[in-house]
Every structure is written in C-alpha cells, then in structure tokens.
Length: 349
Ligand SMILES: Nc1ncnc2c1ncn2[C@@H]1O[C@H](COP(=O)(O)OP(=O)(O)OP(=O)(O)O)[C@@H](O)[C@H]1O
Ligand SMILES: [Mg+2]
Image (cartoon, rainbow, N blue to C red; front, side, top):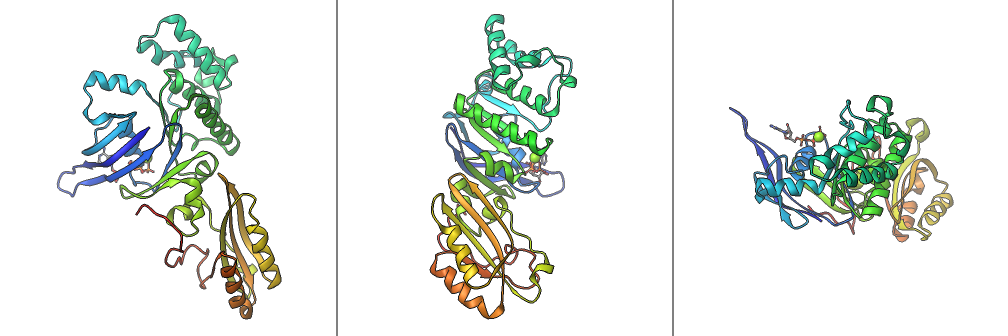
C-alpha cells in the first residue's frame, strides 16, 4: 500500500519565487490496485513519482510504502526499500549493450541474488511478458512494444510490491498500447503488485485503472475509484476521463442542442430510457460516446431538437434521473460552459 500525507516539494529559485511542485498531497493507493495519476503538464506528476521512488526527498510530509516512511529511512534501509519498487519509463531505458535477458538479470545480480536463482527468475519474467524466445536479442533488435515488455520484466524481476510507471505507453501505437495495458493488468493479477501509472492518455485510465488522482498545480483536485469518478457527470475529472462529444455545427442547423450525460450500472436500462425519451420528442443524436468503464456504463450525448421541445425534453430527462442541459450557443461541447456541479457528485476538494 502507498500512502502520502500532506506531501510538499518546494524547489527554490534564485531571485524568483519558489516552485511549489507538490503542495500538500494526501492520497492512498491500496495494495494490488492500479492507480492512474493525471493532470496537465507541470501539475507535479513526475515530481510525485520521483518522491515515490525515493530519488527525491519531499520538503515535508510522509510517504509510506508498505508502512515505511521513505523520508526518514537511512541510506541502507533506503536501498532495501528501493528493491521493493519497480520502475517503467516512457522509453524503455534498456542497456543497449546487453541482451533482453541481460537487462532483466542485471538488477538481480546487483542485489546479490545467486546466478542460478537469478537465471530461473529471468526465465520466469521473460515468459511472463511473452518474450521467452527473445532473451538473446539486443534492444536494437526489438520493437518498441517488445522493449517495453523487457522493461516490465526487469522492473518485476526483484518481486517488487510497487510498480511505478511514468507514461509507459505514450511512445506506442494504439494496438501495442492495448497489449502493454493488458500485460500490466496480468502482472498485477498474478503478483498482486500495486501499480501507479502517470499518464496523459485517458484511454489508460478507462481501460485498466481501478482508481485515479487528478493533480493541478501540485494539489489533488480529485482522487478515488474510477467507477465513482465517471459516475459524476460534470466534474473536472469526469470531463477528462470521458471525452466530450464534439458536435459539427452543420448537424445543428437551427435546432437546439441538449447535452445528456448519464451513467448506470451494467444491466440497468438507462441507455434505452434515454434513447426512448429522445425518440419520442423527435430528437436526433448529433454526437455521442458510449463506453463501459469498470462496471459503469457511461453515455455522453449531444442531441439536436426543435426549440419548442426543449422544455419537455429537460422535464423528461429530469423525471428519469438523467442529467440534461441545453447547450449555450458558441460552446463547442457541453463541458465548456459547465454550470455548478450536478447533485450527487463527490469530490475530494
Ligand atoms: N528539479 C527541479 N527544479 C526546479 N523546478 C522543478 C524541478 N522539477 C520540476 N520542477 C517544477 O515543478 C513543477 C512540476 O513539474 P513536474 O515535472 O512534476 O510536472 P509534470 O506533471 O510531470 O509535467 P509533464 O506532464 O510536462 O511531465 C513544474 O513547474 C516544474 O517546472
Ligand atoms: Mg512529467
């Protein structure tokens, strides 16, 4: 388990005001969870992960990994603690002069594992990532996805309790990304490792994260289970995870636009209800996304409708417990002019 309590990281700058890269971060990631950290450039994501690897000391606050406070460990305790933390970066960062197997065995030999045991472990890891037959290949002979698999094998070799990933799929194409994401999930399922993934790809959050934190200016805007985050229709985090439907003005013509956002547990007929209300009032779906995230069905629709039907539609959706709002002219998507948060939303801040 990972716990951060009121963590700050301040970088002093000569002649200028200090940078508060982390400004009182409190969050918890449970053992065996896959946790996404999202936020704009400069939000503090990499600083956070560097603090988690103990490569960087926080200015104040506690960082507990499996109950040990990284900030107060002695150098030798820190070396032991680092063995329980595996890391995967955007570029796989492999040693070019070593084979795939050589890269995986390297940290094991450094940590003093005997040759036979290390070799068995390397075989197991290469099997885990589906590269049993490529152990003798050098990084230059492997594809980007294969190199990232080797990096995951290396990170998992010493049996860490935590796997930290900084943009692990950002350099990969869509299909390879999917493969790496399923691999990370397999690894978690098999070894129960806690995974923290920094990413700017919301697809990563939708596909494999159990929980997620949104950072902004070094602060936690929102943190919690992904299913809960996407169940909110109009929070900053929900807006990031579920893309807003963009409507082509050509399709609007002189009709009104309604944004209809809903979430429901799988098996509930909310989607069908929404479609029926829309059809009964002669509304068309101008744009929309449907997705199934965790055990939640997520729908974001932009409906076009005759102006004199707007009120009836808003009433109908309200009666069905579905969030609907007329889009103001000029907004390219329903999120842009977000009013106050809808009822039932939970946000950490
Ligand atoms: N070593 C450093 N010295 C001074 N300022 C730093 C240092 N490292 C990071 N910062 C500042 O801290 C803030 C957070 O940086 P960080 O790299 O954590 O952002 P990030 O969320 O990872 O961004 P990106 O998505 O662009 O990678 C930024 O304002 C950055 O300029
Ligand atoms: Mg970064």
